[in-house]
Amino acid sequence: MRGARTSSPNFQAEFPQAGFTKPTYIITHDGQVHNPLGAGGYFVPTITKPLADASEKSVVIHIGAQPNNSPHTGTITVFALAFARAKQMRDADPSIDVTVSLDLVDTAPDSSKTMDLDGVKYQQSHRATAAMNQFLPDYEELMVGLSAHFGDVKWRKTFQREQMDADSVPAILRWILGNHAWLGPRLAPQRKKLCIRSACPHEECAWADKHGINTTFLIDGTFMCPYHGQYVVDLSKKEDVRRLEFNTPLRNLVRTIAQGLHTRSVRATSDAAVLHMRVTGADYSGMYQERLLWSVLMQLRVPIDPPMIVYAPLIVDWAGSKLSKSLYVKKGAYRYLEDKDMHYLLSYDNMKAMKKDPMALARMIEGLLDDEGAMERPYSIDYIHTFVFDG
Image (cartoon, rainbow, N blue to C red; front, side, top):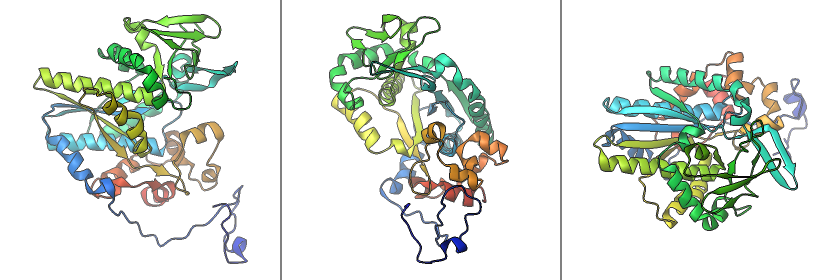
């Protein structure tokens, strides 16, 4: 809306810049907040509440994050919803063992360790560089705080190595490699090739072909390091499997199948079945899951009991665009928020520094759970600043 204009010739006199470093626009409204029901809003209460009455005696609610910055408002909202759902289920049936699992994607790229050689992009992950260590205390402190807020809900922390340790993963990977010609164009449409990475095993190297351009798939995977040449990942060796890295759609497919197989196998052999549930942001709903997950599972007839996915409200900026971690981290966006003393919304670390209570977002989520339509809509940072933090 950069071209927006006011009919008043004295716009600057009426709305002075107040020291803002860039042009700032004023939006007026009546202050009324509406939560009309639409699509899933009509059904969410009846879909999610029966989970507490299911036959499963153990529920794991998964949340994920790439630990390359301090969690921002959107991430905190997702985490809060996971703990709120856990409390709901535990309160409805105290015999259910509910755990929130923070699954950290430490294989995410360290943006300071990337290079381009002969048109191929290489990267080192946070697992290799340990750059994430400066942010992990914020995630752990947030989890402790949310657990306490919601009545000591159990939680745990995992890394990608532990995700890859599931007994079913080698077989899943062989199935994926066996279908790579079909899966590649669907999960990586830009390059039409599965994005499977493995860091070079040489000590102090750890470079990986970001998009798997020079990776080949036969029985196992053969990878290329720009400095040390080819190396093979043997899928029969657990330590080799642990080294594998995926792009987001492929990682989503692998973990969905692994969790779904786990639920199905336990249901078949035990009275104390395990249900996996996932809470994530609404930007991963709709076309993303339809095209990159569910249609793949249906087309290839994968026999699983898939996890249930619950979507948290999307946090958006003034224009309705997703509050973006990558813009904030890499491009220095949202400088206007600093001018308005609203940059605490960009990170947990900023919230603490500016004496803002992150549990205000937990209280917001608790309130939204009582409104059938409130969970099925986005929330702007201006709304949150005004009505949640009393800005």
